[in-house]
Length: 302
Image (tube, rainbow, N blue to C red):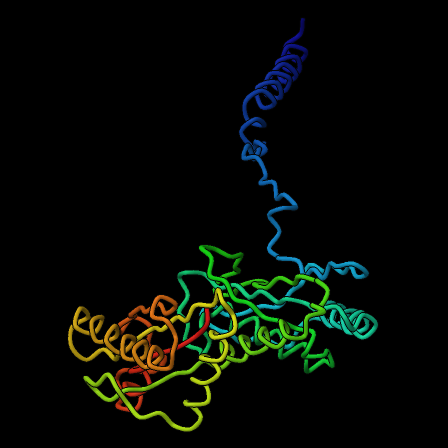
């Protein structure tokens, strides 16, 4: 074989061998290995959805929407504006109650045990029920067909610091006993605007105003006619002094009211007293006026 042929053969072998080695080693280095996400995607169940339905369900009405009234933590005021779907439900409820004048709804408001009640109502759940009732009445519903209750529970569905739909609605026929309805309305009046008496520092007595005397008369009247009724008297203080002393002072204030009620003919075993001391202020203790507002006793019907 000539030198020229051997030269060309060598070039060909070099090219072939170089190509083989390049494909085997270099290309594998250049190719990116695909990244495989081995983590399983999270599965969101329908029951985990972040809502509490707004439900109006009774004989002759059945309305559901996933939206609902919302309340900030520790607040008794509905966050507005409300959604169109709630407004539609309220219009349906209005039509239903107009057609069924003998039907009534009990609105039960809820609050958690961790929340602070700074309202005039017995508890924050009752205050929320009252705000829902007020909203219904503003939309044209009859106040006479709406009754409110309040309950304190351990937990409620929340989104950040907002409670989702902390209210329920129970449909039932109105009592044919007008006397019973009268006492129910009186109880709602008493608890809706409870008797709150304020006290001077270290004092456990005070003179009653005409309005306070009227509220006291309503309480006495109610308990005299409803045999299983119990009065709850809760004493509160400002934060001056140590807590133990204030708890005792709050109890003394509650006992003063209890004694006043027994003088009006109410048996002492139908009156329950409790002291919250400085634990549930309704105003700022940093200012004189706030301290005065916190020195109070609240009287309601259980």
